[in-house]
Image 1: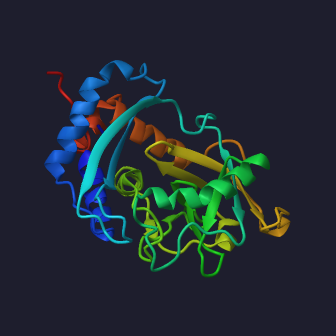
Image 2: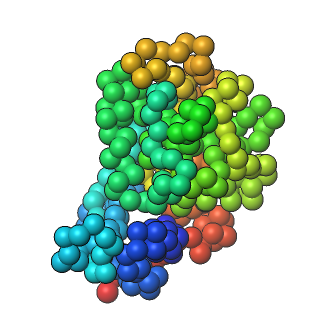
Length: 284
């Protein structure tokens, strides 16, 4: 399992935000272990996918009132999955839609909660009908700053070579485990300067490459970004293409290779160095 301790802490943080009883680290990890053992036969062949784990904490109190639940049910379920984006390391196409945002300052956009995904379903369906792979979410206040790519965190190598990802500071972006891992790997293994700050659509026009990342998406290159008005018409002046629009950038490829090598154990040296990221589940 990849960094289950970070996932446990994130769930505990979300529980505090919604006034739910938090699950302690030991219980979380033990539950995930048991689910993996019980479903080990569903793990896809090497290179064909992964066994995706979904921890779930939900209020199950008997009250009907609009208030926090003092009773919660915690469970973990598993499902074998292939690549999140079927194109593999072929770059995907994103479209930002003016007038749409997934979260606002002061809300709960930083919590991994079901209610943070459902608001994007309608606009995701619209951009996919227009032959884009995913929606690029912009900030609610100005509609000019990049936040997330659907359910994934977003990175770009800007003109001066800095790897930039939107800051967690406003509380509108999910603190992804893969995001934190990429930031560390970019600094420690690639020697990159990494900045967590605002990233505007205008700045992306001169960026060298971009990618999104997440548990399901891993590291997925972004080839182009289109910007649409709320009626679906495109703002052609705001469009951006990275490189040839198809091939992944050099840093994207390197980070994908490094992360995959650690997760699969194929890179023996890095797997040893980052062994604290990998939680081995022993059969009983």
